[in-house]
Image (cartoon, rainbow, N blue to C red; front, side, top):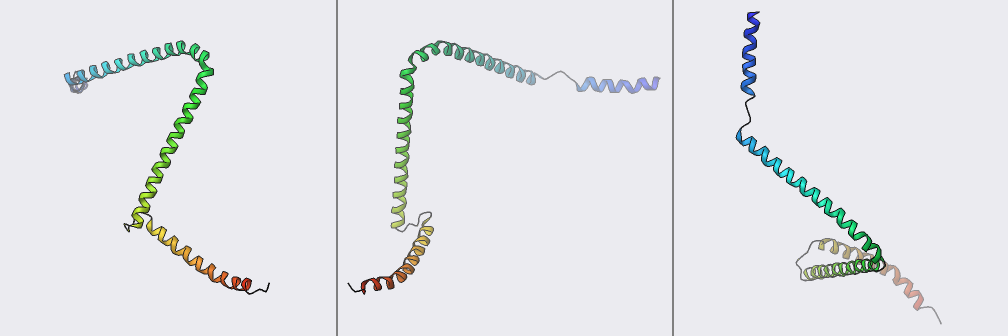
Length: 145
């Protein structure tokens, strides 16, 4: 029994030594995190409360002015979409013109090899169709009137 008691003392002593109190640095970290977390939680609650109050106040006004607001919002959306579309078309045109300028001046922009390949293929096809169409035009021009 005494032998069993001797084995328990070192184990108990090791448990007490390993579970020392948290350091000052860990305590400061915990307090900082808790303070920031609580501040953000309070701010979140205030924001939710303000949003609900604003919605309660604005709902009757929106119902009263909806015959004016709905067409105004639709008009603003259409205007915004139109301006964005026209701006996008302008950017696309400027990009295309810039690419054409670089292609014509021989700077070989990206995709120029595909354009050259397509040009050769179209040219070959036109020559093939031209040779095919040539005899047919001869037949139509030699026909008596």
